[in-house]
Amino acid sequence: MANSITKKLEGLSMDDLISAPLVAACEAQSKLAQTAYKYMTEIGFEDGDFSKPNLLNFTLQRPVETNEGLKTSNVEVQAPFLGLVPIPSLLIDDVKVDFQMEVNSVTASSNKNEKEASAEAKGSFKLGLWGKGSVKVNGKVTTSKENTRSTNQTAKYQISVSAKQQPPTEGLSRLMDILASCTAPISEK
Figure 1 (cartoon, rainbow, N blue to C red):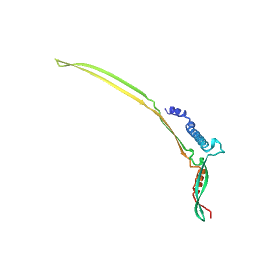
Figure 2 (cartoon, rainbow, N blue to C red; figure 1 turned 60 degrees about the vertical axis):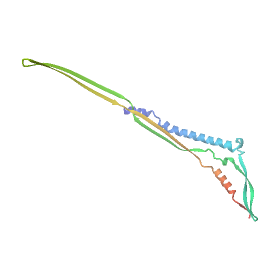
Figure 3 (cartoon, rainbow, N blue to C red; figure 1 turned 120 degrees about the vertical axis):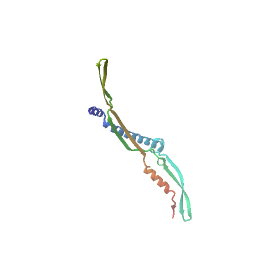
Figure 4 (cartoon, rainbow, N blue to C red; figure 1 turned 135 degrees about the vertical axis):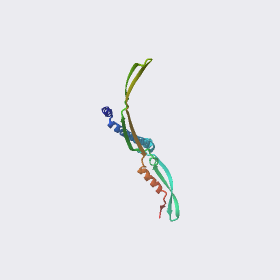
């Protein structure tokens, strides 16, 4: 019995069970990167030409401190559109492979043994001058024996993958700082 369970476990390739989900996660990460690249080239550049970024042009009125008081000055701002939008940049940050195997070896077999024996005895006798009697005895013996063996096999294979959005790029953070600094007054003094 233990031998047959061992033979069943020998057919499992542990290398494949563990490496297949990890290889799939690597391939998925590659596809996520390709998706991000495609998105960036579509919205970030004119017709995919990397020398022509899509720019967002706008004018800000910035306060200027002068000797005569506070005035405003128009400032033209060109911001790369790519730095202003969130880029779908997912990162697989966790892959878990859980393998559990419970072997109870399900095989059902039943042996049943039944034996039966019967006997009969008769006898007659006289009671004095006038009486007669007879006796009849029947007997039966039965034995039954049953053995049942049952086994069960189950296996569980779980794969968990977690992905999360990466933080904003350094370029986007710097652009937001530049835009925030444009609202501070400029001193001409």
